[in-house]
Image (cartoon, rainbow, N blue to C red; front, side, top):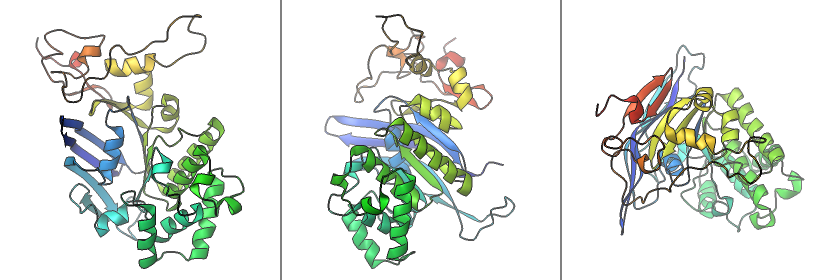
Length: 364
């Protein structure tokens, strides 16, 4: 039986700025089960990263979060045989963003790999120190600077000694493919390449063996050989510890190999959700179909022929179109229907849903 770990219900994230209100996430629903990988795909600006930050209760101001994010926290020492589990349900949107509960969750129970390593790694401290302290306290809060977190770690209780933390840091650097980890452990971030800094962030996120990993474009700066190595590490941890993964990416090839289920987002909304094979072989939403058609395929294009692309451009977030927000770009646009009615979730197959008026009896 699938055991839910995170339940996202009607999540909405709005930013009230000078120009108006931006609905970065608009009524998002998702259940992530233990041991499963859910992929989230979509164009830049569709709300993928904001959703990830909302899970960790770290949406920056002036962001306003509503809805529920229910974290099914397994009690320490609870049975893992599927028969008797004691869980505590925490709504992560309601906890103090600087309180002890969310500090325990961030990094220790839910880890996150961020897109840009240089905004998460301070140039003041060595790589080894960052990983040591993250492991020692079983958390790495991206809300505060690394230096602040290290100070807090020194003042708080330690789970491992400094020597043990250093040994874990060296081992994690080795696992993520950093050459000469015994030497690199004392390097500063500015002494590493972009790809190596990305691997350090992955090492930090995985070092505490979280129950859930949020991977936001985790392999963007990596070459294909290291990318494969990192994905293998994630799979191994998932199999050994029943870890769930929320995998955010633009790389459809990677998500096809990693995910059990895929959610497609557009302008803050989930427009399609299905098992990975159903989505790739039988996409239902016109946006998903257009995304898949835009993937270059060797041998299927003649010299000089243009690659397929999605018509139009992303709408102005301060002035979204009426009805279905995708209708100005949609190849299946139905006048008087798509520009008037707002679509709802419709089941279009076994464990396959689409948010499209093509599958609704609306306006007929």
